[in-house]
Length: 208
Image (cartoon, rainbow, N blue to C red; front, top):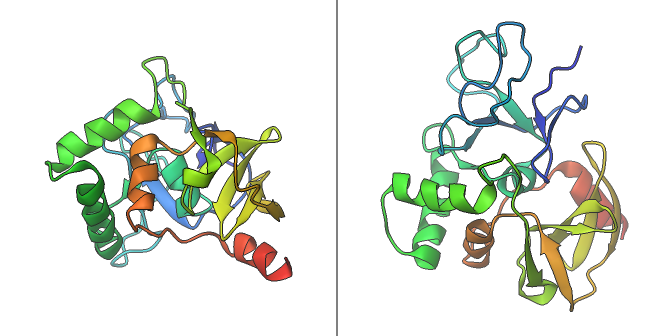
């Protein structure tokens, strides 16, 4: 049985049977039967980690330990409100923090995480969306288009459906859109942080 621990760009946590390329942590969200409880976070420090690190191994969703969440790729993780882990993804973390400082100024990590937290979810656990002209959005952002999440990447919109990228269409270039990626992260992407999209996204571009 697939556990409910796959995160989508619009913030939903589902049981879709796809294998992610990154793992996430935002606290203990599950009970002793590996079912999600009402809470969707227990702290504001949402990180993404590599799937393998220093030969560390453990079963998924151990009682009283953090809930392992999975993302198809980093673009999805950023849209859902996560940032790179400073331990297992040190190089990405350093790049992200550098771009954040250029965008938002130098503050403590705790302060930055709280800024991001306020921009990603409401107190009632709703994923925050915002409007922006598409021409102002950098690669790596997710928007809501044609009733589905779409990734902006190399002048294309890549449709995310069922845990994979399924179709490509040209970026229209102008017009207001609904943005899924939190506004502070959009700014970080605009200041040079480049995430790694899933191989299915790159395959679509090669076919375009």
